[in-house]
Picture 1 (cartoon, rainbow, N blue to C red):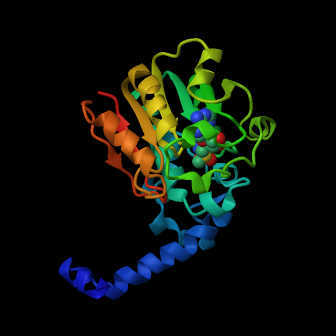
Picture 2: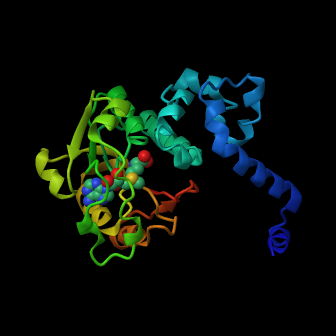
Length: 272
Ligand SMILES: C[S@@+](CC[C@H](N)C(=O)[O-])C[C@H]1O[C@@H](n2cnc3c(N)ncnc32)[C@H](O)[C@@H]1O
């Protein structure tokens, strides 16, 4: 079947297969070798073909133009969440590329994330906030899902997920400068802060339809033109209610969602 498909697509089956297998085998352990990445290190040269050129073959050139991306950040990306995030370097690179784009276009403004868990994605957002001197708002219960979000929802099997964290441990990983922690059930937790406006980057990673819908209703109108809205799990098939909420929300909006081939199938829009 696979051979037939490759033939149909005109792809040389063996070459393609070997590359995919090599990629899958390597990506789990890749971060170990990449944290101190130097494009001239013999061991690491083998990864160049699997990484964005900007951060590998052209790393030196990139560093003369912009310098947000840092391989050392991979250790925070995988801290306490190795089994998942080490296999999702595409997402790590994707977030960096979006931030680079905002820097290149000079789009500044506050940043927000709903769904922080241990802070593995939040630390990148907070790092960006520090660089552009804005605020990064981090929304989570910091105790896992809330029962209210499971009412009428088929995803109850995941109910216990994401309780293994705490506000203090996240603060340790992410830091506190330019960062506002908003602990509690979203959207009720919005009452703890002043109205947000002019957001440049919003990351929604709360898995379930109810908080996704509430987050889209709050954050989308507050995103500035050109701002990025990154939504996790859109194409994963693990969280159907999240995809439903996204599709429903963007039905009558000018932007189309663009699926991204990271592990959990994020999708993205830029505000027009
Ligand atoms: C997948 S985890 C976030 C992972 C994190 N963004 C990362 O990449 O490392 C989902 C998080 O959403 C939070 N969450 C889900 N629904 C929520 C709600 N209604 N209010 C607050 N937090 C919520 C959970 O507590 C959990 O920490």
